[in-house]
Image (cartoon, rainbow, N blue to C red):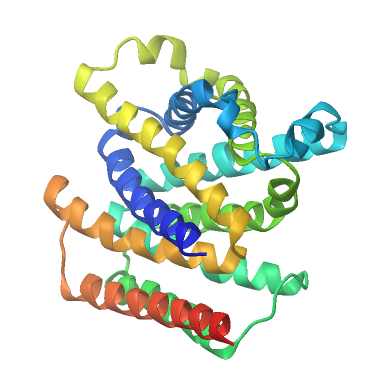
Length: 304
């Protein structure tokens, strides 16, 4: 479905922009506090639309009926997925951004599609085609190329930042695969809002050791502006993400996250003065080629 792929592409761009914005403020706002504010704002942005009549899909009202008889185990499962997708993933990403540049983090995070592919195929949810596999492997090659300068530099320092970003991608891949059954049964917007609320409550407790109640009152207006952008764009972006997952396979949706390194590299160079060298350019080209190849796989399949 073209609209679902456009939603996935928009999310890829939003992820890159949010990574750059988070890098701008992560020195002032600790990782857990930033994650809490991000999805607290995102939840408030979605809340006015949750109960709108036009969100009651499908037309026969079956989603409303499903919400009325919502099983407890589904509530707990969606809350757990929300903690993973919003709390753990973003906290790990923010932690990594303390020592990893925005473009580098975005490139590592673009391993998301490969991890999703491996998990989805391992569970028997979808087959691995040669074109799709080659497309994702090209993206992996791009990430490896971007890390070549550090790999060649003796005593380059610890890798905990890169590992944290990689772990965040792994968490996101798992949530993307396991979300799909619930998105088929329940309305997308309500699932998004509920998952965000569960994560915000969880993060509010975890972030107490960062002293967030006092810290947020001391933030400068320009910092609040960046945090608001991160939160509002995340609320909109995640709704688009779930919409895409509802209408397309997890692997085909997550491959569009390959757009986030290009966004992060351009914005990082313009706003954070991060270097845009040949290593980074080559990595972006490989990731873009992987995206093109994986997208061609989908079109070829649809034409049969």
